[in-house]
Image (cartoon, rainbow, N blue to C red; front, side):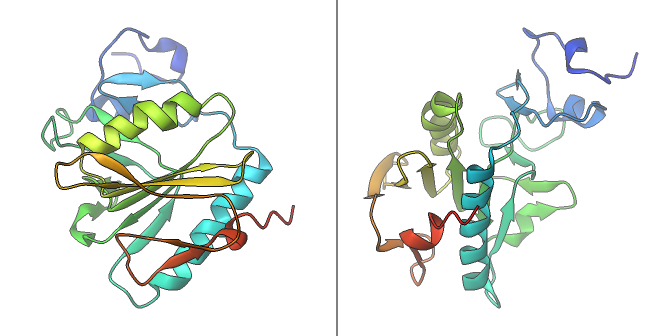
Length: 200
């Protein structure tokens, strides 16, 4: 079987597993959503990267000497709730902009196996539906306890947390200076102004 060295060699209608994903030898970062290949994500614009660094720095500072870890993309998160956790069974591999994992048994040399506690996606042009619908549904059904969507253009953050029925409910909408409380890390409130300080 020929090595897969280009995205064009993949069948756009094919269904792939994490075992397949591990054999691909091209440079683009792709996501696997329920077996379907999500086209390469375009390189984030500088403002996206700045906000990502700002958030990661704030979270990492808070987590020093705590049992949770923060990871920034590229970082493979394998979601397994509906498939099982074997490489050939897993059909969803995502690259969240930022994720926090508190159960460190989920971390291995290939990334995170199972749902992180908190995921943050920073919306890029053309990715609005992917972040607000596809990933929203995916993270909800896999039990990601808290999900934040950051809108750089509007400088707003929408925070969702799982309710007792496993459905996302809005925990906060932030669009002005002030603290943004984190439900899964009750002692942490990220400052809106620290996130949207775009010194670029």
